[in-house]
Length: 243
Image 1 (spheres, rainbow, N blue to C red):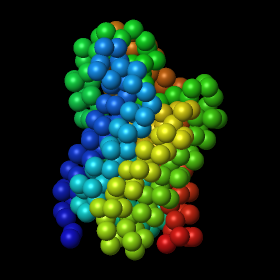
Image 2: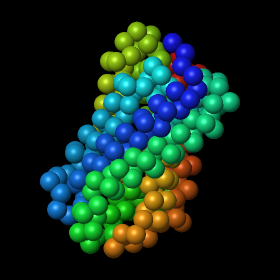
Image 3: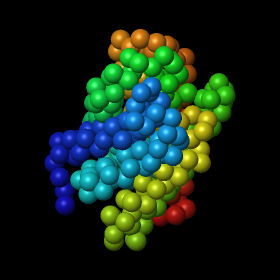
Image 4: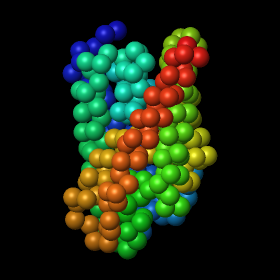
């Protein structure tokens, strides 16, 4: 079924917002002082991001494709799987959705932001950085993580088995993200999505939190450029060798 572009954009907006609520909401639950899930660990965060992708793909995969990620949109345009004329509107919807979702996280966790003294813990609920303070490692982690995500997601959703049973394919995509966060999330988070990192970083800069520290703009290009590059390579691998 074909939907009007505005309906697709609303789906991308809501889907990306849900990704932020589930994903960065899980980080806030683990990192912010005084929450019920304080220090509950990395598995909580991985589950949050896995479900944060699974549910939007289940809900909106049949409406907009549930890209919920500018890197995925750009990569599909590059390999001819998505119309270039819709690329910019999709990306704008995703960016606005990421901002809206992060604002929901901030609103619901605001008392705990005020109670948290660690600038690193506060920043982690917004954006990514490299644990080893290595820009090269940052780039490589985001590049390869996004490449694997795109190959896996496209293989699940577009190959015959996934096209026949999109609900099952959507669930598997969620598990791919869950697995990637547990296996490759140690160095950077990971982001794997320019909207998921850039818009929360902007909000981190603008919102008046005590103890929030730097927004790390000197490295902010990495979780934008590396996922896009990784996604394009992943889409090329799928398009040329798998599809």
